[in-house]
Image (cartoon, rainbow, N blue to C red; front, side, top):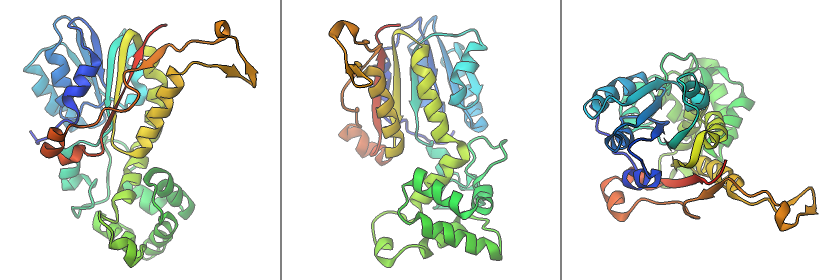
Length: 312
């Protein structure tokens, strides 16, 4: 099995406060790092785990079967969390975990087209059965759509120039590989920007991956559904790596855990205030320890936020 180090493993498992007879959901199975630790703590409980990557599901099935049979693997987006669980007779759970990082094997397998470090056909599909890939986005979206994707999902300052140059380049011949795209991105940036630390195509590749896999839409849908699926005392733990995902998660958690003190400009009396049904485990996100950072540099940008359901 490909080596993959699960980020914030101990803090996230501790945050879930796992009960041996509980029902838990891992929304991002990956190579089962978090799922394996959850399963080890269950006796009569059950684990449901989601992933869009069929290869990850098959590899993880073998690993989890060596621990317990109390699990169900679901090949679906976590945007369909509510629908998939309710179809299996599950309406309430004790804990939900989402690790929003792309698993290392996906980045390290050059043939998947996720990485600017390997020359491969533009792809970036987590679910290889879906039609939309990075190739279709790069060669099919108009200039305005490309600019929107790069700006909104990559926070790319040179989004307009990159989009314009993509359209110019593909007019001559299709943009087929990751390295083809990298060269276009480099040609769209000033020498001053290119001299900065970090790969110049990082934000472009991030933006395309999010668009191809519908990540932003899926996250918003999950953050709408997951809190209501928790039992009282249940916890939702979300690990983010990008400012975009962390901002979305933070805003949603704040909205759910804040007392409404006024409405439409009318100041309410204390007894009229609607009390929140959720609270935050910590006001600030949990970050990787120095030991984890030394062992796994990829954890540097990780943040763990945890929401607890306090009332129906």
